[in-house]
Amino acid sequence: MLDLQRLRALHAVSVHGTVGAAASALGFTPSAVSQQIAKLERETGTVLFEREGRGVRLTPEAHQLVEVADELLGIMERAEGELEQRRGEPSGRLTIAAFASAARGLLPGVLADLAVRHPALDARLSEVDPHLSVGMVAKGAVDMSVVHDWDISPLLLPPGVERAVIGDDHCTLLVPQGHQFAGRDAVRREDLGGQRWVCQPPGRVCHEWLMRTLRTAGHEPEIVHQADENPTLVALVAAGLGICLIPRLGRGPLPDGVEEVALDPTPVRRLYALWRTRAARRPAIAETVRTLQAHWPPGAPRPRHGGAIGRRGGRGRSGR
Image (cartoon, rainbow, N blue to C red; front, side):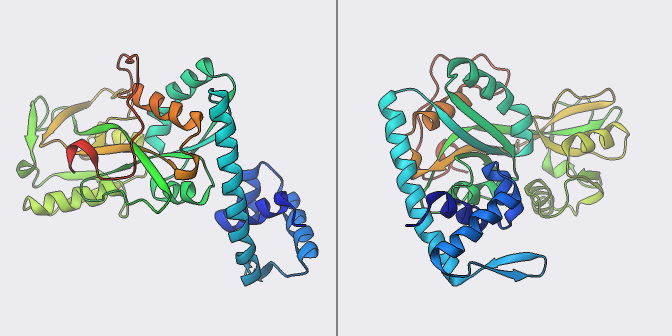
């Protein structure tokens, strides 16, 4: 009879791509995962891994077993969710992936709140880029993820994944003290020509939004400095090296020498919580979504009741 733990190890390698990453996700050592796979190979009498450079490639037989493992894990997930629902209390482990500024600016308060109100719930956070975490939810690598989209890059969900809106994160223009835009209530996009910009690198939504928006307004952006992290961008602005556009979530207090100016119309990115359809009945999922919504925007007074979980669908009330 096939051993479920060994199938789980094989499934994790398929989802995460390497034995090391699978071991990290499962909380095992790489050697323990390799041993599980070796036992599964002896158990089934098939070769499951083939060497490919420094990594491994799953054989056709392994992919067939991964499909079986996915079905079995789905059955277990539904059963665990039904048991949790009968208890009526969020409980068990809940793994959450969130992009950097949400992990910094939103999740600490949410996780602390959940820990106080639901001590039986073991919520665990990993910081993951949003373009990766959607697939991680779909494949069962994490239970939930917090992601975002913009008007130029709508969020597309794979089958079996649902979402709820958390809130809208407004972006503002940051300029050095003494800049021509400093002290103004708002700046229109048509006025942004001839500026030196600091921005995230190509491939990031903020970069693509800036390029597309300024070109639509008739300007070719001059990007003089690029950095992945928002604190680095803010530091570059503080040094007088350019201006930048940054969402407010997780940005932190602005240092001396940096001023915030509204951009008209205001760029907005929308945050969502994602989870698998087969886990939707878990009280842990529903309560975490409500808590995320109740803590939005960060620092605002919490309402007595969060909004209801939304189903898979369009971009909601903004129509973006």
